[in-house]
Length: 116
Length: 117
Image (tube, rainbow over all chains, first blue to last red; front, side, top):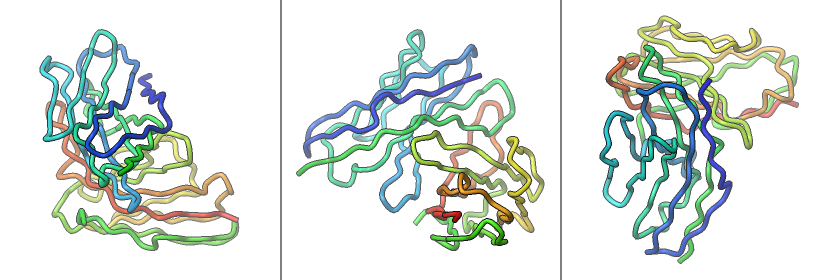
């Protein structure tokens, strides 16, 4: 069974600085997708970035980028030029590409605080 | 605003009550989902519906009963719940149930904070 681990329950960053959130996962599959979701205090979870395991190039979305290390089963999220609006819970998630399923397996989340 | 709404936002119910959670999506999507979010635990997928047909049921107790009358609405009927069922219940929708090579993005609602007393 696949598992997703986020070992940092809380992180903090100064506005305009860079912060990296960690995520590791365990799977025996070779094809899968990885996601980072953001859940602000309003609670509506939104997709931040996604990575296909077969792609070696790290995904990037504006200030958000990932460091995908397939051999190490690591998928960290880097937020550059942090803004106050980045404060939220961040969830790492895994989805198998092997089966026709929508089951997203989530980590326990990291709460990010952004200080002015 | 993501186009997925949930009502009520907060609900307190006793263990013998019967209540329903409602989810509505205004995005023209075909798939809808129920998730349970408990404190310090990973988000858990409960049910998946595609075109009003249940396609996934992840060993959820029968005291949770989903209903999908059409592709825009999803209900979660609750009865004889336990205190450990207290959690945030999130609804999500996506264009379709994902294909092998194309995981459709899921759009989440704001959730219903459920407290069982």
